[in-house]
Length: 183
Image 1 (cartoon, rainbow, N blue to C red):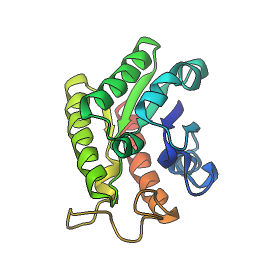
Image 2: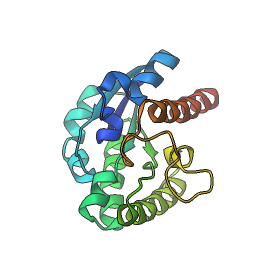
Image 3: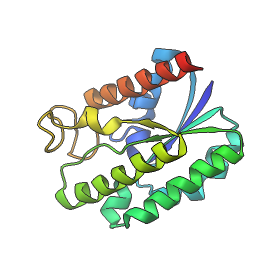
Image 4: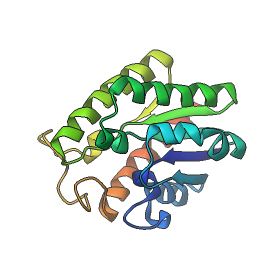
C-alpha cells in the first residue's frame, strides 16, 4: 500500500511542518508509505490542476483527497467543489488508484462553516452513490454538542494544533485498519 494524501494546509500540517501532520502520524503509526502533498492555501481546483503530477505520476495504490477549507473562504459554490473532487476521484480510478475522500474539518468562521457543511453533505452523497471510502475527519473535530469546533484541538479556529492533528491521524488510522481487514 502506497498512499498520496492530497490537500491544503490541513493536510500539509500548518502551522507546523509536514512532520507534525496527520499524514506523517498515520504513516509512522501504521508503518505504511504515505506522501504528503498538502499545499498551504490550495483549493479543490488547484488540487485538480496538480493531480496528474502530484498523484498519478507517483503511482500510488490509493489517494486521500481532503480539501474545501480554502474554497469556503473564497465562497466557491458547493457544486463546483463536488465537481472538482469528482474529477479527481474519476482520474484516480482511471489510473488504477483507489480514491478515498476526507470530510473537511469544522472551522469557527460562521459563513465558511455554512459552506463547508454544504460541501460535506454533497461529498457524503457522492461517496455513498459511487462506493468511495469516506474518512470522517469532521465528526472527530466537532464540539460534542455539535455546534462548533472541539475545544483544545485548534490552533486558530481553522487549522488543527498538534492535538488536533493527532485526532485526525486516529480517524485516518482507524479507517485504514478497517480497509485492510476488508481487503
